[in-house]
Structure formats: structure tokens, C-alpha cells
Image 1 (spheres, rainbow, N blue to C red):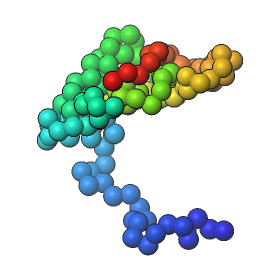
Image 2 (cartoon, rainbow, N blue to C red; image 1 turned 30 degrees about the vertical axis):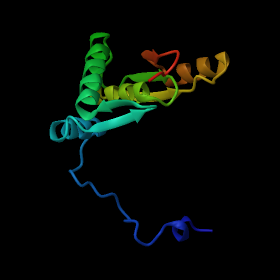
Image 3 (cartoon, rainbow, N blue to C red; image 1 turned 90 degrees about the vertical axis):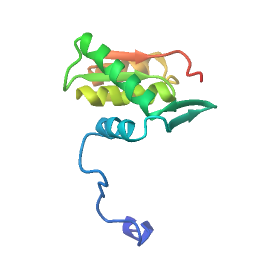
Length: 131
């Protein structure tokens, strides 16, 4: 059975780039300039604005660069789906690093295998994602 038959007719057949083709983190930077006080994330009632998101991403990207992480390096993100995950993901994008998400549900040997396969230069981890 062809996947084509499951795609609604009104869905574009090729990607549309409303604001132009650019790296994902640049969309955050641009959106933060346009609407810095609008809500970007609402996580269990804790709100983060686009301006705050841009600041957090930029600060973490700067810290990663200070640690020696550079374009092409791999970063493991070991945390749940939460705002901190998004910040880490976009900070890695900003410096040109690749991301390997690692589930906190992994057993020790699964985590070890993934980090070795990824050849991660850095592991970003938090124990709990609280609002």
C-alpha cells in the first residue's frame, strides 16, 4: 500500500519555508526579535517567552563553545522531553553540533552503547525536568 494515499490532498508536496531556508536555531533568533514577549513554551504552567528562549539557547551555545565543542561534534542529551531538552537541542544546532537524544529510561548498557556509537564529546543531563 502506497503512503501517498494517506496524505491529504491539501498537504503541500514539498516543504514551504515561509521565512526562507535557514538553520532551525535561526528561526528562534528571528522570532525572538519579532515577538520577544510572546509565550514560546508553557510547561505545566511555567511560561518561557521567545526572548527568554533565545537567551537560554545563546547562553548554552556559548558555554558549549567554551568547553571546546565545535561544528561537527556530537552531543548526547540525556533528559526527558522538557524545555531544557529543547534549549539543549537548539544550542547544539547553533554551534553546528549533532544531537543524540538519550532516554533516561535506558539501562546502563543501553546508554553506554548509544554514547559510544554517537562518539559524544559532551553529555548534557539533568535529573528531573521541573517547571
